Image (cartoon, rainbow, N blue to C red; front, side, top):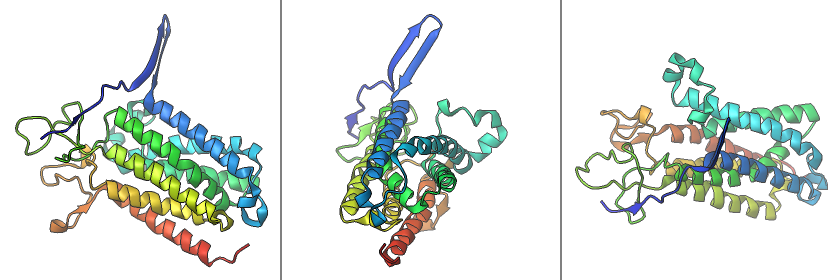
Length: 296
């Protein structure tokens, strides 16, 4: 099997090691920081353009977005970590509860972070009397850049790679786990760069769709942009999961594809696909609801 050698990129951007001070900045951490900062500026920019919103009135003042970002950051971190614990490795963390706070060892779930952001945003809206659907629309527009950067960071970390492939753009990822490909006795194993597939669909394509919808006046109908984001992300994630390697805890000799739901000869669904289905349904519901609601 032939493929493209993995580029020689260190997962650590830089390290400061001076006496008692030892600090390393990883690309993954930088992706989180940059994604949140970009998202913050996008939301502030939208709040400063009242003509985009119902009755030509922005949901809240731009100055309040800093308070919102505090709730969003807590939602991303707590929700993302707890989602990973509950959705992907509940057995391990039940036996090792002290490992739950160790986010620096890896293990974050987008779907968990998504639920955490919803909870944080709902709290903010209730406290400040802000319309939840309109603010959700703004946050939906702010999310794809962070998804793009996060998936690129996954690629740099050589993690969450795809299934083996003989396509010309397959990447030879380093490490024994990435080279453990059934059926390949000798030679190197090339895999789908599924992180880049997700970066393109969840980040670039989804952002373009949302911007196009805003240009057509979608923010005038609360919930429409948020619904497009839910359905668009869920569909993108569901599609890429066909090329993405399942998490190792789901793979067994009797279940080499790592499906959490099996349909026999028809295949099955991965955990990522299972969690994406409610997002797609919820997104379509919000889009239809916004369409049927009377125009403000």
